[in-house]
Image (cartoon, rainbow, N blue to C red; front, side):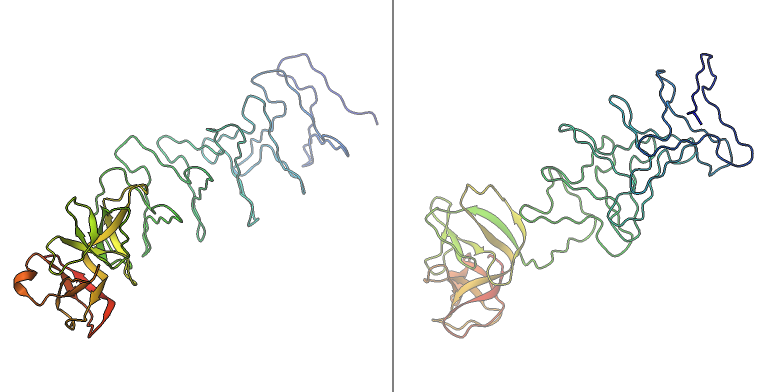
Length: 331
């Protein structure tokens, strides 16, 4: 049987028309090596191949199936590769049962600034991601922001809500800060600092000055930090934070790495170098600077202690030198 061909010069008239009223296929094309059905059109507003189904809801206009190839492929040099539109339902719907494959994937290999997947809606939601047990929306980038949110209105650029017991927004960083805010921060509830014990602030320190965590620090004549060297020094300003198992909860005055600075605990609990050689230290004793470099001692002289107290001992030390936790209360 010769191949079927069709030609029509009349407008709105089909070149080939196939009809089957008995429930079969209207037109079927089969090829072992190339396209089963090929459509070609020179009209800018007419589809090369069109599928229209006027039946009830749930019918299919165009259907493509391939195993293991691609069911439907759309390619365009300057227009839209695949376009989907619906007045009452999804414009494009993708469904997949593979655990490692996206139901709908958008990939753009063009230059910087290109868009892999774009979603727009007015006034609805541009992009919605929903998952019962996985990630609702996941964004990753090797050199830029994983997820970026921007708005010109009064709403948040990025908002996180958790209706259960977990956090609304969670941030973690392997190198830099877990969160950065360029502007005011408003908190309507409690701030809970996990595994944090003191409020610290960064101070300038001399290049030649070596100050380990737990060292008692004073101000020199130039306002630069130095290790304490004299007893009852009224220039005492705090203890270098980070010794033992205690870490700072809040750090003020942080600067770049080019300036030599130390984090000084000004308030809260911190491990401190103490010397009990001259007088044993009991829990609750006031502490002041000692003659031993960078160490505190019991403040036994009340008159000389005024303005030179570092804090209170939270653990006793009978003799010798050691790191003990103290409560920083400068007075």
